[in-house]
Amino acid sequence: MFSTNDTGPVADAIKQHWVDTRLPAGLRPYARLARWERPIGWWLLLWPCWWSAALAAVAAGNGWPNPWHLLLFFIGAVAMRGAGCTYNDIVDVDIDAQVERTRSRPIPAGQVTKTQAKIFLVLQSLVGLAVLLQFNTFSIGLGIISLVPVAIYPFMKRFTNWPQLFLGLAFSWGALMGWAAVFGSLSWAPVCLYLGGIAWTIGYDTIYAHQDKEDDALVGVKSTARLFGEWTKLALVVLYLVASILFALAAAFADAGPAAFTGIAIGLIHLGWQVTVLDIDDADQCLKLFRSNSKYGWIIFAGFSADALIGWMV
Image 1 (cartoon, rainbow, N blue to C red):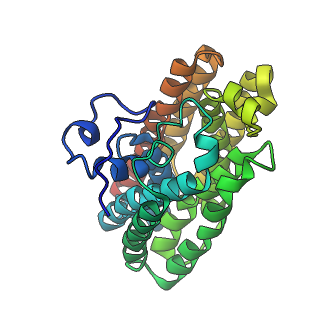
Image 2 (image 1 turned 30 degrees about the vertical axis):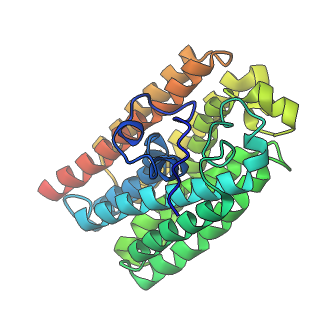
């Protein structure tokens, strides 16, 4: 199964990452399929899970999010983000081969075959399943349903200008899972958190998509970056305001206190900074701003977690 055709790192990967310097050559293409050398992806998948777990702690009167749940979500995010990227690369191999930034990915670069990638996809999915089975029955069913947006997302760029919306449906699903893992049900708090996560995802992935807009236009790939064009900053203002309002509603429904809302406010300042400095024609800057959303995740999580602790102490 292991490939030895290591033709080098992917174009937009973190330089000199341990995947490219320390892993055996035969394993590197699989690590690249899973995007281990680009951890921002699993952070963005993980944050809604951790936010939801922290918000559930607030609502339940616990002093902190369940540490076991946080660990499970971390393992699950790494595994399922890797599985999702592998699936995406299998589906998009012909498109990736035509785009400058993606033609160095393992399948179009000839580092692994489609069959090898499919085997790796199954292995990662089994890890994700093992994690999912640690939760309650309601959460297991909810996790299985999440496979629907995951399955359809890679095809959306062929048919709609809103593939980022479908990415949001998949990547924000953890906003439901963290709450369900604690309560075995859903309420308005996780639903608002989920909807806010979708708006946030559309925003940050629009910034990301501006890296490829010229190549996308040539090969016929659609995106909100191409749709918004010169109106991108205005669109981001709307998306980030909507996300922040929905996060505030989620906190209110969870009966959160000032720390949670302070985190949301500080997070909005960070998002406003992204919009202010954004240059949609600077691909390197777009990538840096996209990656900065990991900091935004920490801000929201810190606010929710601090609120849980304060509420428990008083």
